[in-house]
Length: 332
Image (tube, rainbow, N blue to C red; front, side):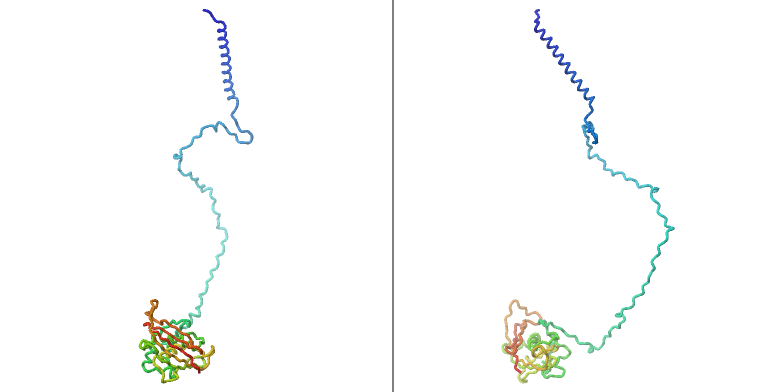
């Protein structure tokens, strides 16, 4: 067998080279292990807190939330009685003086309680008669029983009353003033006369019995005293005095009994005023907005007479009858 020397030489050289390289690799691995044992892990130096890297690198285990104990924290027991300070003795301390008790005297009876109660008279005539008050700005007044009593007195033959100028003033039985429209201040006689006329006569049933059309005329003189009080009212012509117009004037004057009136201006003086009254009755058709079923005055109106032009007083009955009274001032 023939041996190839060059080839054999190459094989041995290769084995030697691989052995050297293998030995050097094993030595390097051994050196790394020695370094790990020689050098300590990284640490913070100086004033900072040391942090152990190995502890940080450890895995963190989380506790199951459902297994966390729900028991309340333990209550710290209170300190023992021995540690509680004893109360300070007060037996030897001086007591504070108690405030004196003051007894208030009983209040004296008030002067009101000592006054004697007013005596009530058993005589009805000794008591003052009530006075009715009516607003001067409106027609809110219903004749009622006084108007009926006045009508009965006239129908019973006692119609002289105011016309005769009796000493008692011709007032209706009793002390009623039939509402006494207006306040106590002085007012013009002509204006007050026209204003009171529809108020005083809406309840007089005579106007339902008269025929339609002209209802007569009447000239009447009204006298006042120095204080402005009406003292009488009488026709200037006794032969011309229709009964229904007589009732109309007497009702009107009774309504003005308690007032004070001036003939001219606002100063009172004794004198008289003469009025010419002309009555007319007509039938009107009530509109749907009218309500004649309501009690009291209905559709009232007036205009005071002047020297230059006449005034009027008007009122409408529930049946639709309208009574219109023309009022003229006569020269003295």
